[in-house]
Length: 342
Image (cartoon, rainbow, N blue to C red; front, side):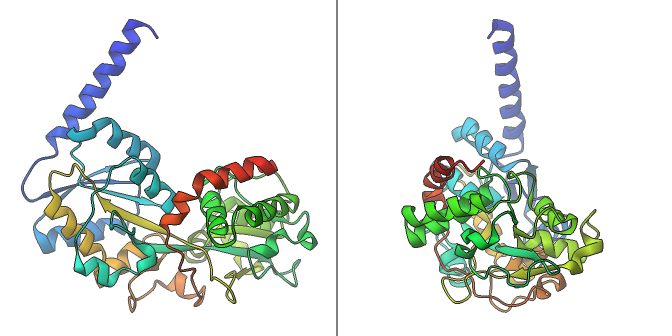
């Protein structure tokens, strides 16, 4: 690296820290780093500001980039709360020692235990289910469990994302937690053997593969499908009636779920406001907007679901504590690599 380039990088970092410092240490304010950016979140934040008089300053971006930013800012970080998706990503932040424990009877009472970090470093505020989708025309007996996806009778029929994708890592991490590494390896091998194509694209692309005929069975998160039922998604919504769905493992552990989650940052300058915000996210009104913004399931019992989610039906969710998804993440990637899952 040249001296000029090194100087430029240092200047850029210093400028970023200076900018964030200016937004930070003020009474009546909250500094939120968020990887969520949905239209309904505007009302979510607006209602909080109206109810509390606390102004929310937001920095939005990719989850991994925000985590790296927090690590770089260190003790000088202005951020009070990190809000992101997937337990695997929230675990990455936890592993970097970014969170502080929260003492809140309200959060402990309203958020299900499986969706809380064991030491209250983060809380899940909405869930999405990892589901099996299939072509109604071409599949008469769809898989009913995750283990079924490895059954040779489905050879050449299944589409998934890449093994390095956080959703795929979390799914296999849950298999490791329930069944052990050996059984999880057999599952990964069988799933790889049943692929219709090399892993590629996002969850919406897996669903599009069902419409195009490239795959007969796909694994995807519930909200991608619910969104396509609610609004126009190119090359999917027009043919959505061709697709059936299964909540896996209803006679076993239940369907694997993941979260949108948030935690109090240990260097937060506005800790009291941050806890108020987290408690607000667990309120009935916030739960509805928070979940509906991404066609997800609210986590607090009795909160009204959005119409698109209601169409999916009721299901039994896996109650595995989601902190284990992060704990098993590295092993999951190792298993995928071992079986040659791209």
